[in-house]
Image 1 (tube, rainbow, N blue to C red):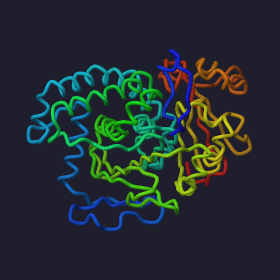
Image 2: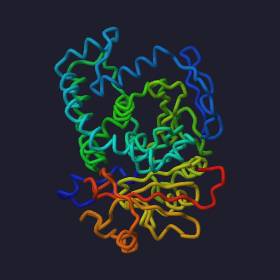
Image 3: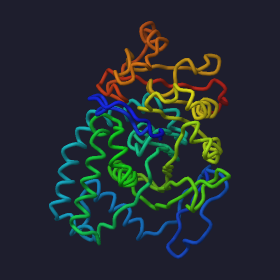
Image 4: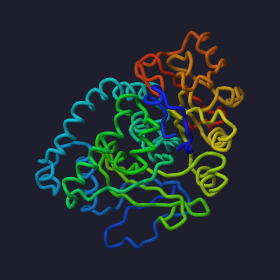
Length: 398
């Protein structure tokens, strides 16, 4: 996620700003002291994964509870769902999620099936820097991803044990979730104020749980992880870059997927202080890098390292105009395809206007429209996306 940048307060601020393979085989309860991670973050294909059934049920039911989804009567949380606090949570999602599904997510998935079919067919590794906990849109654009690597400034946080929590604690946690989700459900991105206030206190884990549950995924395992000095994932220890690994499986499928979230500063200063993060990022097989509502940070020299890492290590990049400036893409190395419309950034980012990009959109006649909003220009038919494909891909790689 982007570093802590103080931005001017305005009405626009309320509508914008995102905060800015090694396989871990999920352990059985009697085997938790086993070595956690192999040497690189690349995941090998496997048909099954060992996991603790009891813990999986608890993870999944907790996620459904937070997401306002009704549980079976045999769940320990079923009795808690009779409380007024949870009924408010259920009502909140019943009011917001169908609208989000109809206006946004269904259209994103349809667009993805048409325009990203080849990349999804290879079950890609998805790299999503400056993401915050936005697994929702990463999964909507890339529903076949094998691994998702999200990076943000916000801490991982913890999940409250709702079976033993007091009614007051339950209410407080559920209210925080609703508050944190408001902007992304309305506008497609997290607001900076929410990230600094809500997510700094509660962490991203409750939001990740909501998105996993609401996208019909079963959580198999959740582990706190860290990045060691060699840039490798290990069991979290003092002094490490902290993160979480969630193993999950989509409804109706048996092949497990993996979601990683790391709490880290991607600025040049941040990467200089934590060189192990740069090592880790360089090891990720970036089939696709996704950038959305990234506050135009990589237009600046203070984010040159992560920009260079993305451009040199990604096979494909999908971004709105807040990601990497068009002039950074060498036409001899990249094929570029544009979607939607581009006029200018919102007023808060007026200094990031791209004359080159405006010229592309005003002169090319074959640019397909977008019938959904994405990024800061969140109205339908007012957003833009660019799909960049590196020309030096092997012939067998889509």
